[in-house]
Length: 105
Image 1 (cartoon, rainbow, N blue to C red):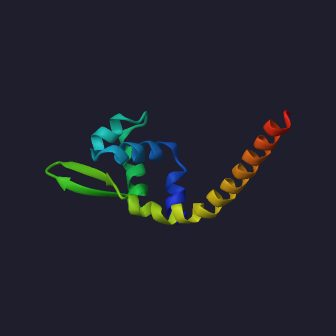
Image 2: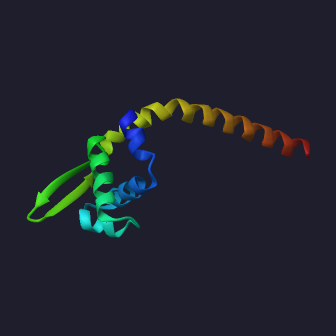
Image 3: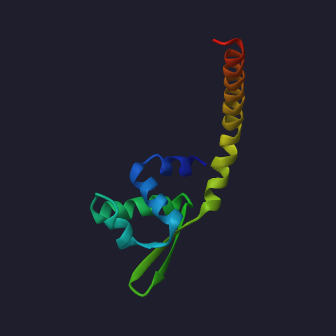
């Protein structure tokens, strides 16, 4: 999970994942979407591959990347406890707002 969190910490890598969430893309397409040099994009793609967040396949001279959403399952499970905490807090806030409206304040 640490490798996934470290990979997600970088804004450029999050942009790449956002693109791949919608469709597969070549390395060139991903590089065109980022304001950094291609060697930097290659390094970001390597980090994402090593974290298990993307897969790559070779088609002739092109490398096609795709998102591996299953790599995010561990993060989602870890966030569950925090989701529950926020749901409880938001429920309590809703209750207080409803009380205020009922009391006319």
